[in-house]
Image (cartoon, rainbow, N blue to C red):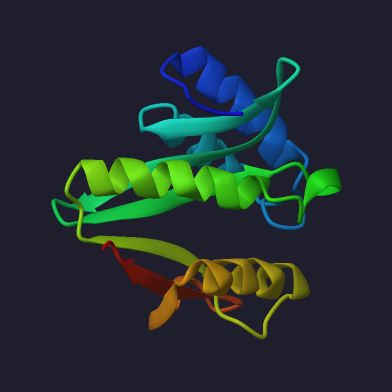
Length: 152
């Protein structure tokens, strides 16, 4: 069941636990710590089953028109079970209710890492479209690709 989480300590525990389970995506300690620290201040949803968080997503407002998937993670052992889609649906509903026009997500450009290519396929299935690549926004070996979606 996807629930909206307001408690900052709970957000921190959920995000740190799940991101620690995903070192192929979140293997840079400073970046991961920043995701955990910042996401506890943002709108945040988690998939909770039997009092255990299975995944989470947080929303960053990048403009009054755009909501960004700031960070999202699902425990690796249960990827491809629909949890990410359910989390995204809660995120999308919130964005629509709060009158955002667009959703964006940043990830590594396709073709650099198998793990991120799987992530990109997930976003494409949801309806995201390629917007722009910033080859050195993060660093040369992680070109930042932005995907966007209009909210209807």
